[in-house]
Image (tube, rainbow, N blue to C red; front, side, top):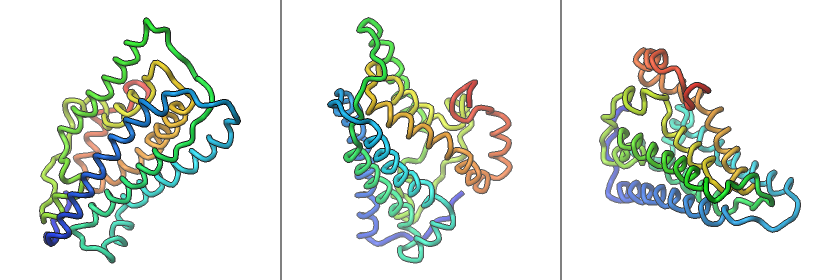
Length: 238
């Protein structure tokens, strides 16, 4: 469990709360671009250039998102900011990069598939399941801790290791929820598909590294959980 740090001053706490607001705004902006802008077919043209640009763009976000989550990077950040604001700083940078990633994502010409109108509710049901899983899994977590607000106030996460409910189905239900949301669209433009593939591939690759950190944090409790819940992200597959 994370150790508590001395609380930040009032400007530091405001910084943390604004970072939490930026994080929420980045998620809302993603929902807008995915469901509205990415749902419109792109004008004809080459596909290699926008795909290459999107791959580089997402790689920049992914490298930051993973690198700054490691213990060594956290200690480096704490050389420049108060330990109480380390998590909030991470949230600020990550949220800003995610906003930029969504905003500058290049439209990719083409339609991967489009379900018949009668089957559209099936796709919406899959995406709704993704949203439901997201809310269900998020309720089990300490949102203030994830946003860095609790640390700025001088506290530490009191959330124990989750191992039942949705966390008894797969070890990372939020990642399963993401895959259902981005792949469940009944009208899959190439723009949506590129985002779905790149982001889900990143999650698949990142999970083993994330679990190494969780083993360091929770020790034998997490290794027992890994034996208890076999699947990382997708039941029966991974």
